[in-house]
Structures are given as structure tokens and as C-alpha cells.
Image 1 (cartoon, rainbow, N blue to C red):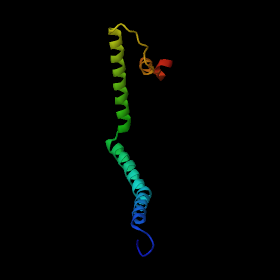
Image 2 (cartoon, rainbow, N blue to C red):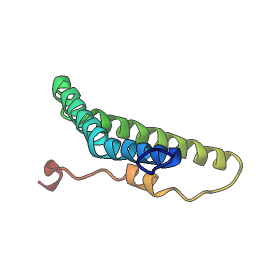
Image 3 (cartoon, helix red, strand yellow):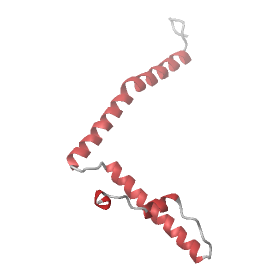
Image 4 (cartoon, rainbow, N blue to C red):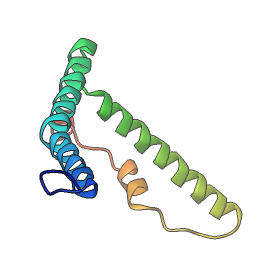
Length: 102
């Protein structure tokens, strides 16, 4: 026990509490702000009309479509007719442009 009436376990808990407090109040918001600035910088320097995240999502969507097509092909080879997935139906529909309405 220390002179102030606390013991070693209280001191350890107090130190742990302070570490959590400092992390949540100071460190985490600064890391988050840094990440946002970094993403904005990459997007601006790249001069791209879409962000890297958009490109990654597009690539994942393409891969998912390819996997769904492979699954449907395998089902057809096995003699099973599978219903197309909702994303496969969307891929077949093409959006109308202004030229189509004229």
C-alpha cells in the first residue's frame, strides 16, 4: 500500500484507464484525420475522376459477375438449370442514354 492509501492494483488500473482515455480522445481522432487527408491527397494527385476505392469496388463487382457466370456454366454442364442472380440480371440491362430517347 502506498502513502496516499492506494495499492499497486489501483495504480495499474488507473494507468490502464488513462491509456484508454488518451487513445480515444487524442490518438484515434488524429489517425482518422490523417487517413482522410491521405485519401484526399491520393485522389487529387491521381487526377482521377473516380477514387481508388471506386475502382476497387468496380473490380470486385466484375470479379463477382465472372464467378456467378462460372457457377451458372458449371450448373448447365451438370444439367441443372439455375436461376440467374439479381446482379446477373442487372448486367444484361443497359441504361438508356439521351441518344436512345430521340
